[in-house]
Amino acid sequence: MDHFFCAQCGKQFGEEGFHERDGKPYCRDDYFDMFAPKCGACNRAIMENYISALNSQWHPDCFVCRDCREPFIGGSFFDHEGQPYCETHYHLKRGSLCAGCHKPISGRCVTAMFRKFHPEHFVCAFCLKQLNKGTFKEQNDKPYCHACFEKLFG
Image (tube, rainbow, N blue to C red; front, side):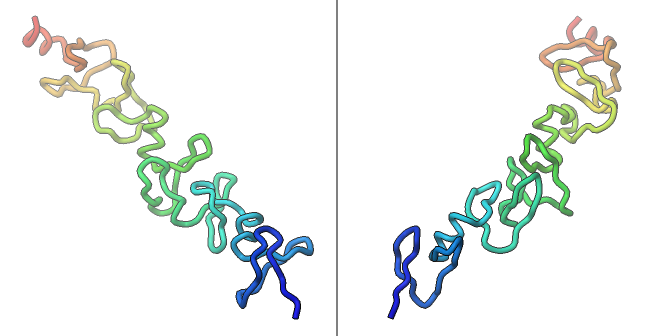
């Protein structure tokens, strides 16, 4: 009786059989390690279902936000440097989260004090009146309208 051995590890094949590639027999583990596509997150062999995105294949459990590891609700994700992110972490990476509400900014924004704000969230730290970029004073890294600034610090 002929015995077959894995061309990679030399293990004799038992009842589980073998896989063949280019005329050579391989055990299941070596075959998948050597020839199966690798997951874009964990780099392990993909042997069953997978997600194809961002020019890679992913185990379904591995295709999650790179930062918070949460799955993508409704399947939508954001690409940042070839990695998948949820909307919040994508905007955090890009520096486009509002400093007032901590939500993503996709439209108009005010940049002040080295931070970005939705226009409606750039407000006086005391009276909460909406501010315009050139009409505020800064104290302790907080914006104030001129009236409140004079009242508090004048």
